[in-house]
Image (cartoon, rainbow, N blue to C red; front, side, top):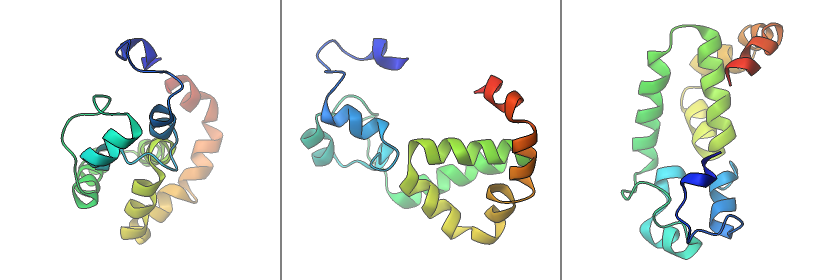
Amino acid sequence: GYDSLLPASVQLDSPGLRTIRNPEHNCGMMFSALGRQALGIRGMLPPASTSMETEIARTRMQFDRLERPLDKYMFLMALQDRDETLFYRFVMDNVTEMMPFIYTPTVGEACQKYGHIMQRS
């Protein structure tokens, strides 16, 4: 994994690292400077903090670049795996558009192609 890329001073079992790895609590670039300092994650993320609106816009651009419904589904599931807050906000802001990708028929296709998807991950 990425553990080998971390500075030697970073404890691999630190509360901050557990927070970053937990999609329920990870805020990605939205962690403030004070939040990063308090969690001991300063230096583990790019130095700039961003707003939810900026992250939504970035997510939208990445999502819109994808053409196939299955790729959009996989993108959304990866987003949910790393940052649930951003995932649910993005879906709720675009619920009508997102439903086909997080519900049928795309989920049905994902189930049929599960083995292929897992090989690509």
